[in-house]
Image (tube, rainbow, N blue to C red):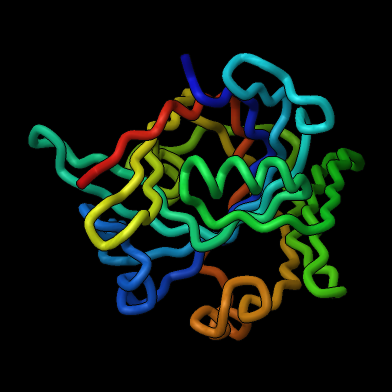
Length: 236
């Protein structure tokens, strides 16, 4: 049985090209940094969890909620094939029970903060906005797009960012938690404008303060889909 089933919807992604030296210290045992056409990325991602079930059960007041995370991309070779995955610097959610389970079971780095979102379609535009309150300061990530979803091109940057089907979390210097995420290929919306008001040092530590002055290489909005998170396995 899948550990978690849900829908991930309206995923706003701001992708920053960064030096590999920034990410290498966060790379879990047994993985190595993944790159696309010579570029290493870290992504700010905001989205909605919908219809969430934990081991087949809906938990009251924990079915629909926001998440914002900062993640980067890794991989490892398995049976001669490159297995692409993500590592999370931090994941922010509004529900303390979600934080407890994720940090305890999967050894992720979740934090609980007040959050809200807005989805609005009018005047042939789609607005998607995610907000969270950290130490009394509201942060937000907003995109405005065309209202119709389109296919993600093969071998594109957007495909690289969205087509990762494994998660990796540091346990210690000799152990890593590995788990599979399943979902169909996603579609995306054409970005018309975006606004990012995020203090990266406040949210993710001084090692990411430089992102405050950096424009993203690209910004996306993916529609998302139903997903599963499978039970973890330990790499050692």
